[in-house]
Image 1 (tube, helix red, strand yellow):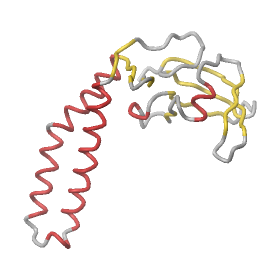
Image 2: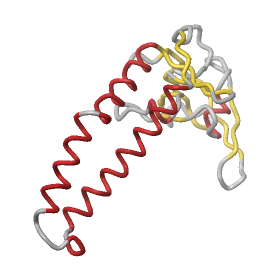
Image 3: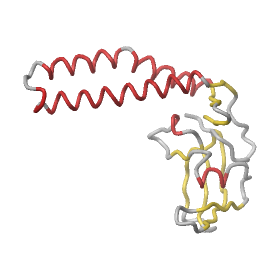
Length: 165
């Protein structure tokens, strides 16, 4: 779970440990692996027309960007508790909403920072239009948020429970 305010990111211990493990992997074994890929591609000859070399260098750049992001995030992180299971939407919770009050048109998502995004569940930032619209609302309440086209959309909070990973 993450909640960002004043350049401080609040993380549960679980989230902190997960991100720290990712950083350790990317800073160690993953760097070694990408260096080996680059060396192998370099041995293939002319670098100007070597697709494997360019792909490996691009992968290395993305990896190093992620290392910088994680380093910065973890340096400013404060470890805290998971949100209470009190039915109030907060960062770190899995939220289920119904669009325009239609119980058949629902969406379930994790309200958290993108750094904690998971392939298991869609993640919305607390700063996103939907995230800021539902944050602080209680189960059963309606929330209104602004769409990219400037129109308003209404949703009903059906459920809010702490993310279990």
